[in-house]
Length: 330
Ligand code: NDP
Image 1 (spheres, rainbow, N blue to C red):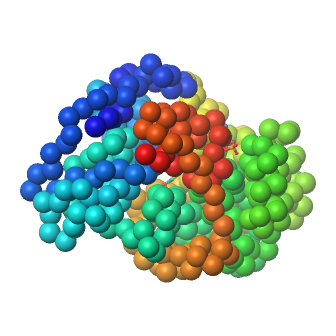
Image 2: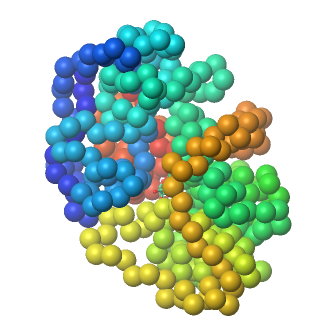
């Protein structure tokens, strides 16, 4: 059974030498555990944080140990009540082919209800992030003008479409290529979109949002955040979800220069972590599941095949190779 190890903590952009795909013995599930043959692995931006030693909300990856991450697979051995051989489970022992997982840390998922990969994306962690961040942290309400960055990614594409489905007055997205921008307006129903690489974000946002914005869902930080503060309307709300533009920085990035605008706008900025919002999971699945099934809420996945390509898939997320959720299929 092969598994990915972190060998050294990356400085700046992660390099292949910081990692190794290691051949290990097949894990032996103990009492109350199951052996899972992973079929889909999730690679996510937050994993960059876990590669560093800095204290954060998730513990740093240990060196020379298998890395963790979301995964879905088939149970091939069960020493646990309530989970049978042949069942599929969502769990957290990704970055490897086989995992021994405690039954208490495995959630049964049904491939008949939805494709297995969607439990990592549109109906999984990134979906709930979009739902909780928009509805709870950003206090979205009907009639809001919403701006979301990283808008062609897993979280961002769902934020924009959710806002539309829930009655936003206007939804604006930014992404890093002409194809992604076209996808936003032509398929996902965004009212406007721009490529942040085409020119200053503040200028492009002003043109796309002539009446300002009420909500900014921030996936990228940096210039985008400053531009959003600049465009914020009275009582505007900013949900800080991620800051992918600075994850590989070796020096702290400068903060927005225009924070005092929040005084005039009575604006609010609030960070959130999806892990604090799992109480919303049932409501999320009840509301969003039917929209996904009916096609009213569209999603894309970028699928990379093979355990050996997992690192490349992860680096691809940081580079923007993905449209929608990046998934590794084993
Ligand atoms: P995505 O699917 O959005 O993939 C990341 C995308 O970021 C890339 O496709 C790329 O798209 C974009 N990107 C990369 N570099 C930059 C840059 N310098 N400036 C602008 N965009 C860039 O990932 P997720 O949907 O999984 O995650 C989106 C964000 O949400 C991340 O910041 C992540 O850390 C955060 N997150 C936070 C959670 C929480 O609990 N707070 C939970 C889950 C995710 P492009 O081609 O457009 O550049």
